[in-house]
Length: 211
Image (cartoon, rainbow, N blue to C red; front, side, top):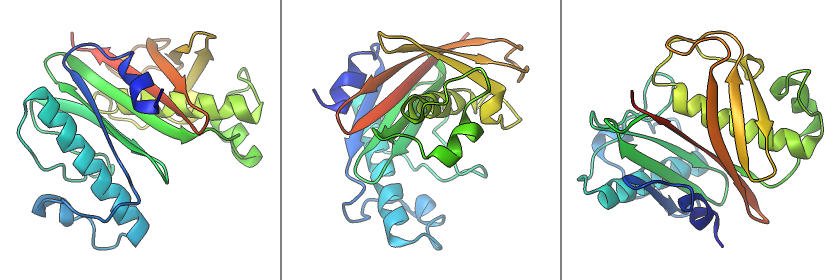
């Protein structure tokens, strides 16, 4: 089963996932998006374009017309007013997750290679209470990245990796807890997600329902 199929198994109705190849030519960008590409190296431009193409494919699945996704000040995509979503890629895979804003307060997605995290990054990613095993640390990094993406539209302060702890479970589910408060999230707030794996990749998925 592909990475996309494994993720779709955890998606509810009215949330769409689409993929692309970040090695493909950088086509399909809209004028509002091209404004952010002047200083991009070719590989980054291909990744950027693949993400925007995948996002528009996911929009189409929801019945939404094609829309530009300019880059915001924090480099995250700026979604249309009625949508929320997330884009993630590595060197060989790109995926976009899109849902309706009246259903979802935030969506988070992160893709990582199924390789151990470099040893010199483990202490940056993992709190003292979390595993220092590089393979587990890669999964923790993936889960934290997806969680950050899911909450980023609602908070004003950028958390560090030590502002959150993640508990990984054998069934692929995980629980992230914010250590300090990040309004509107209280200190200790629980955020649930799911981690899926293939021989080459792992991906984390976080869906936060609208109030």
